[in-house]
Amino acid sequence: PVERSASVPTRRPPSPAWHHTTATVGTISAPGSHPAHRRSAHSGHEPDERSRLATISPVRNNRPQDEAPEGDQQMKDRDQPTRTRGRVLAGLLVTGFLIGLAPAAAQAGQASSSWGYFTVNGVSYKNQATISTSTGSAGAYTFLGRTSGCIPSGWGGARARLFNSANTLIQESSILYNSGCVIGFDRVTSRSGGGTWYSYGVTWGWNGSSYSPSYTFKSPNQNS
Image 1 (cartoon, one colour):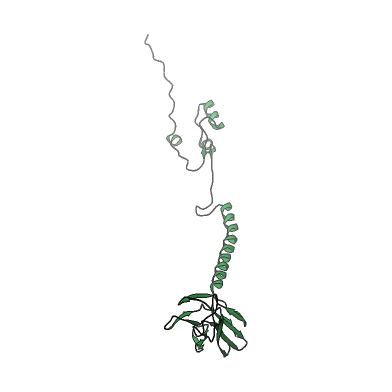
Image 2 (spheres, rainbow, N blue to C red; image 1 turned 60 degrees about the vertical axis):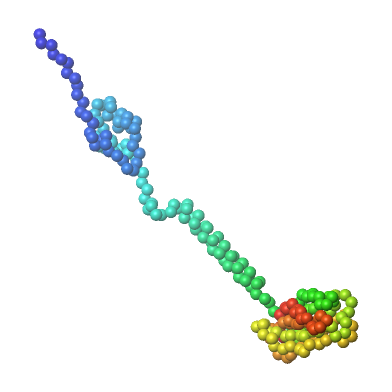
């Protein structure tokens, strides 16, 4: 008898479309884990198209790429008033700082400069400028004194000068020299009119052959 070889059962190869399908969005269940796969394995047939599609769980993201997530947008909306208040506060602080730098003119009254000190021919002096105003008038004073003892007769001189807020010399006195030994003395010049004024005087000390000048500090501004 002729020996016949046993026939080898053949199985149709899987569809290329099934094995090479790539899902760009979604989750594909592992082979055999989905009920459709298990039924196919028991029946010996490949899963049909509906079973295959049932294994893909679509994940949709309908939000545009340039749209911020809702939570981020809410944070931006909450931060907006804070940033606005911060800018307003910063503007107020800068404005207040600039106003503080501007020299302020006092109302009618009296104001004096700091003391100035100088020495001539062994004699120590001190001087000061004062502005005194009332409604419609202003007076500038220059004081010259000695830090200790008295100024010998004729050794000291003083001139008063009145300036307006534009730093213009409006009026000045002649030089007054002390008569007799004095601790100190004033020289004054005054005028009528309204405005903003300050005093800035000059004093002198005898150096043995002539007079050496020394300026006072400027007084604060005063209105009249």
